[in-house]
Image (cartoon, rainbow, N blue to C red; front, side):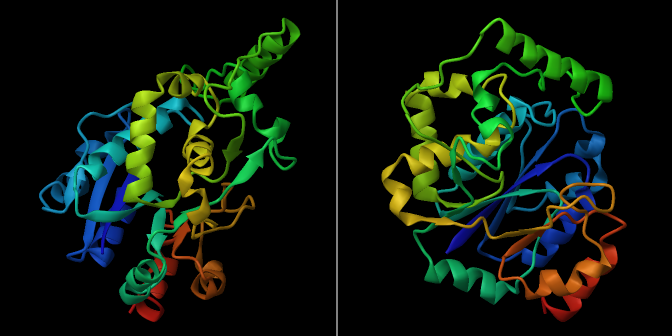
Length: 294
């Protein structure tokens, strides 16, 4: 069974290089989108990867802002590019801070045993553990594709912009095809059959696609909603197979992993972990390769 690894990248090119070196088998294919505003596209590491026959570096790049619709656009571009390879059965969406945490045999055998299942984390929206229930991400227009929301001033501008819409009672109608919406983590492992279905649905229902423009973190709702409203629903496993520590640590939430995470990562039943950031995570990754990924 052949696998496609869809990688959304901004700057952590060393980790991409390490991932591809480790999992570079006859059954592995890699598709990389580098944020258009990132200089990493011209990094020698990335350009050397372009020379590999099983690596595709997307030239049609978009500028990705955190939380913006642009990230979903980049992901859909990766999916469409990956589907051009008719031999790939499963696709795994990753960031440039992800790494596999199981040996080759265990990884590939897992999907041989679970062929046809869809692995994605999901909850029906609105959900109590999502800020505002989650559907507020779609009901109101957001500015993430226009300004960098991570700046304090811009974050306040965005908050006021949404507040103003509530005051004057602007609320988008989001029921273009589906009565129920679902959301979950960005990253997943999904079958070729479903992703073909999703791309076809996208083509035939442009009004559904339009709902996600000027939304917030559209990639955490888009595929989940199509999947859980389709005939593939019976094959869904509510697990994205990613180890993630959702606490603020090492300057980030989710946590940037370090040496102290070795036991938790190595004993996890997940197939991937994130976030590996250099140089902080280098020793952890080296230890995993020596003691777990042999």
